Length: 185
Image 1 (spheres, rainbow, N blue to C red):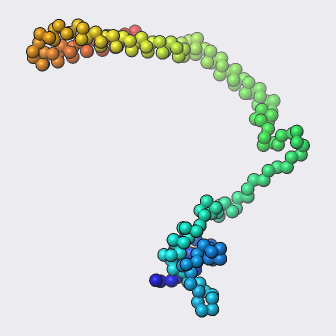
Image 2: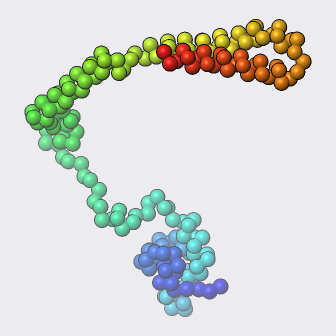
Image 3: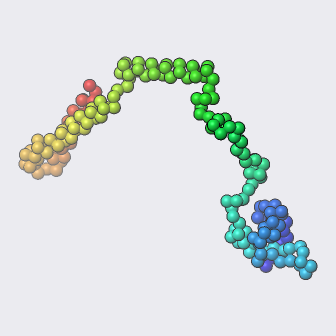
């Protein structure tokens, strides 16, 4: 086994030498560390150390440089218990009079525009759309379901598959054209 220094292992692992020294002191790296006769200058077996590092490190508690530099927000102290904090106030309380008037005018304009579009026929009731879709579906179903009744006697007397195919294709096309003609109205 080839042992490496703390600095070399830090380079292999992609961390700082200080992080490796902390791992040794905290007991996360035990079996992979060997000391000299004086008990100093630790040497590390990188293969065993990698396994120990992964097994003994709690990654969810790991802090990166960006985490350390950002202080955690502290709650603001209450001045009076009955007065909400500035960050807890509803949005309406933070608005100025001019913002409130602008918001009211915008809402009124949007509502007026919507009323106009409804009256001009741009928008329709969803119930009307559902009813129309039901009628179209019913027409398609009826036209297709009537094909066997109309063709049964004719097809019974035919022995040529090409003729049967041609008759069925013509009837289906006629039913679908009737549907397409109804949609264009």
